[in-house]
Amino acid sequence: MEVVYILTNESMPEVVKIGRTARTAGIRAREIDNTSVPTPFEIHYATEVEDSQQEEKWLHDVFADRRVRDNREFFRVDPERVVIALRRIGGRDVTNETVQSNPISEQQEEEVEERKSKRSRFDFDTYDISVGEEIYFSRDESEKATVLEGNKIQWNNEETSLSVSARKLLRNPPYGVNGTLYWMYDGETLDERRRRMDEGETV
Image 1: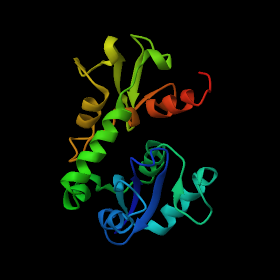
Image 2: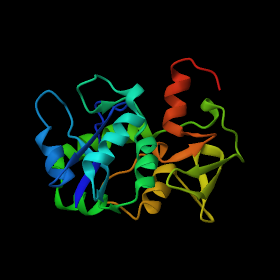
Image 3: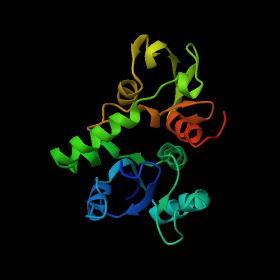
Image 4: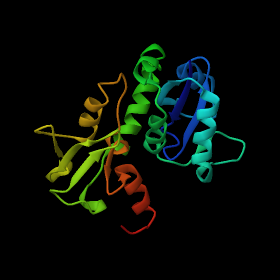
């Protein structure tokens, strides 16, 4: 079995790499980690499939209009958009075990977590989402939460944050989680909504 993967980088938050490998996504992430990129690439999602070449090509075709350059595997797209498409193919999710077997250094992890923490702060009111509104989880729309005051949410009968709840729903991966990438409202992730509205587009 080969792997199709989605890599992200906190230094390029609007871009993802969609690729395939006969080894592991962790090895591939380390190979492209060089001095031209301030922070390491992280494995956002990886899945074992029978025909990685076919599935990778399909994904590249689906997101062709988002490709950064014609001869590169980088796309300007929310990573969860790609995950949703990739999960329709099937395969075995190997994200957590891949990350566990290919950890980044402690110093790199601290820098990445600091950047994630800054980007994960989300003010519902600023982005026209009122208290009492419902949001849902990108990988399982039956998982819903209610927006509370103070940028908190009520999920699973408890008051919590976007990131803590997302991490639990992802089965406690061995890396930090930016909740705005996983929680959705009105057909887009909260991260997509923030970027869109920050660029001046209306609701």
